[in-house]
Length: 93
Image 1 (cartoon, helix red, strand yellow):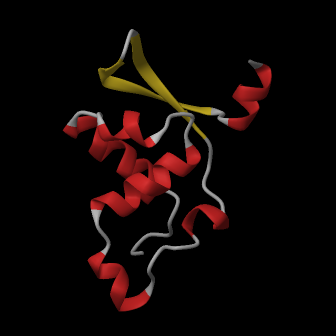
Image 2 (image 1 turned 120 degrees about the vertical axis):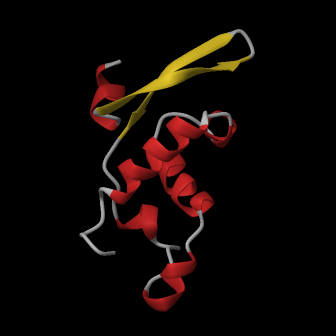
């Protein structure tokens, strides 16, 4: 568990838990993004066409849950995790 806390030092408590089989997920642990996490991100004029899915893909790469869980997030949680990703970038990017 100590290693996981070092790997994913931040916690996002879900507003609406996700049910995955018999498991109820109430929080998502994540780490700060690094260059490898945003390698495929578009920059310049193409960035204006970034889709919500692009931000969710970045979040999936930095958290302890897989895409199946991320795809089951409520709209409120979905937008909250994309705001986490947006927070890694300088203002105006």
